[in-house]
Length: 240
Length: 136
Image (cartoon, rainbow over all chains, first blue to last red; front, side):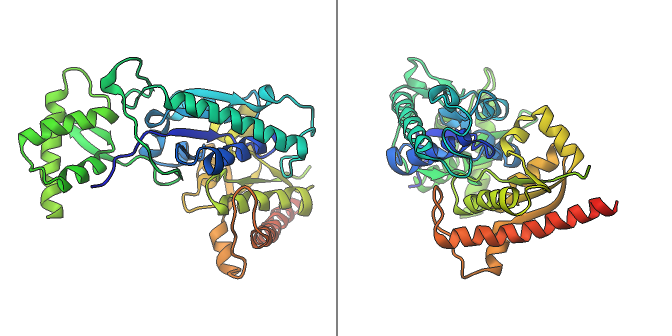
């Protein structure tokens, strides 16, 4: 059975190419992804929020996200909030490891102080990852779920770069509107492989899974159920 | 005063070719064409930084992308910049198949060589832009 995208923490680094602190964000993020928390983290390139598709822009709603910025301009934090959703945490290298001009080396080559900053920032990221994974996250709203157990999803997964993959989406017509439904292709796969028939009862069951990843506006549940049932029947007929 | 060519590498953090794009951009702007090119951080373009947008509006850009998603070229164009040349690292690699890059945080030797090959191609484009500027 295919697995739905699981709970991980998203890392968005500014990668600022013109300053040493930008390189610190990049290398610290890579250290967490590759070494410190490879199973618990995933990343996306900041520009993909603009250049990618809806699945990419859903990144920070889907994953509790840590923005890692080199300077006070906070491009990663602000860009993520502008195009995806508010990051759950933020780190600014120039605040965490203050240094004078070129004290950490250059953007192209960090010196020993720069590499120390990389380690310090990576440790800080890892702390945030642990904290965020210990707290519930509401993927339908892109924010902490508080104490609502229905909104909590947690499971292990595999670390990866999300460039180009994003969160799979499918567009449905719901109540005369085009609505992009997060994770729906995977949900369809999962239901079909579980031999769920395209009947009303399945649509009713499916909507509870869909709700984990999408916000269903109040009063629209019947419309969503109708659209899901219709689309799932069509999907089953296609893949038969 | 002649305008500098703007070199905009992608921010590719999860792929080797993104690192090649970044390293190649440094070689162009710091070693090969420091007087006729300038590095532009893509994150500032994403954010809509006013100063960077003015810079983009006033000079031709060379976008260097590490994957087919072409974030650098798309984002620069979307910000109103003129993408004079859009380079894909993979295309450069196809012309230098002996230079198989590996590593992200630190490129292997072949990756460094590929970055130099990329930089050589880009510096030729920078020279072309500079010549057009002179003749304009």
